[in-house]
Image (cartoon, one colour):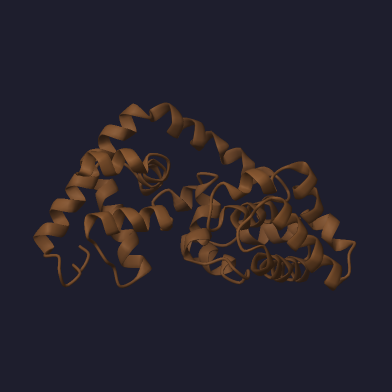
Length: 233
């Protein structure tokens, strides 16, 4: 069980966890069709550029999920495909990335452009998008995949999980991608956690109590945060 923050007793943590579990159980039934729809996206992992695409999607959603809607438009996305950036010099690559992020209305475009150029160099050194994808998928187990992804600039605890959760990968079905929305729910509950792993474990325990896997509770919290908060009052 998680160690409780100083102002919250272990008993209170257990009660809060059960409350989250109860809401998760109800919402999982009500939104089963949506969960099934998201699980069907696992076929996306088959695309040869899966890793590069996932990196672009990560930077598009980082800080504001709606950023991906703009970045994924062909006039923006096509400028930062790996093969498009490959034809440019290093300085041109950075400018192209920043312009695509700005035109897509992505948050922190300059910072993310530097991240993306750094990711480009890692993928290039690995042998290109297809080889990099294969190397990633060959990593044994969840922790090895997480460590592999951490070599990419800008990719931290959340996205090392979310990249695989977006395709419902078996190694990540019992994971929680802690983001601003989940942080806001924890704050709403009066909970603080000293480490990412401790925060993740609280919600994994709630998921198991609800008869769900971590992925299911994570997606429910992301999509239906307002419903969670309303029912937890």
